[in-house]
Image (tube, rainbow, N blue to C red; front, side):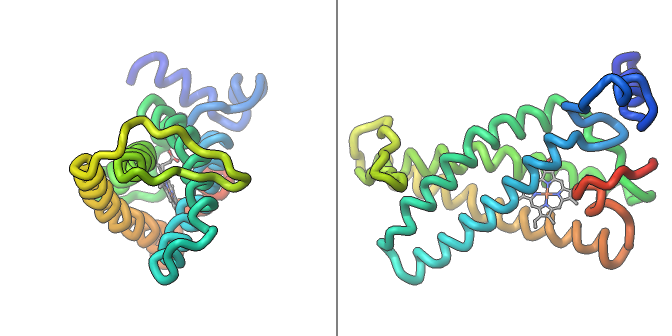
Length: 202
Ligand code: HEM
């Protein structure tokens, strides 16, 4: 283990030097930072709201809810860029309990893929709407500028790319939530509680 990794892990201890000095901005081997935890749940609420709105709009298309959907996607995008960057540039805390290494690799890969999808899917949706000549309207009459002229072929390509990304994203999200429930209700460990802010001794 490198010196910087050791320093980072030691600093995360409740009574370690960094803990006494101040706020833990980044994740390290011993725990998630409060920033990660807050953003994780903000993103989870936004994503679940977007999925719910998509279902409502699918049942009754063209309602005023489209602008709310666009607003949620617009808020989600910059938060997701930060989260993906933070995820790939910080240590992922050690797993709680003694899980199977394959499960750890799969769960971390799914979480990172979800974070990446949160960056790519809003871009694909924005390009698909722009190419289809649809304005991306926000509540209050604000409009997100369109990056291109309408183009039916490009609209089809971006729409297909969005769907290709959205399907595994939803499957990955279901797997992620299933994993969290399994840890909490079947294995009865502190994985979910840690993501809710509980300090877990490893
Ligand atoms: C009700 C919904 C959700 C539950 C119960 C849940 C639960 C959890 C838990 C327990 C962890 C910690 C895993 C560990 O200890 O390594 C975690 C991490 C993570 N989750 Fe979720 N999650 C939910 C929704 C989401 C959504 C919607 C996304 C993104 C689209 C997401 C992305 C991530 C990522 C990237 C991590 C790694 C930590 C980070 O960088 O934030 N989760 N989740």
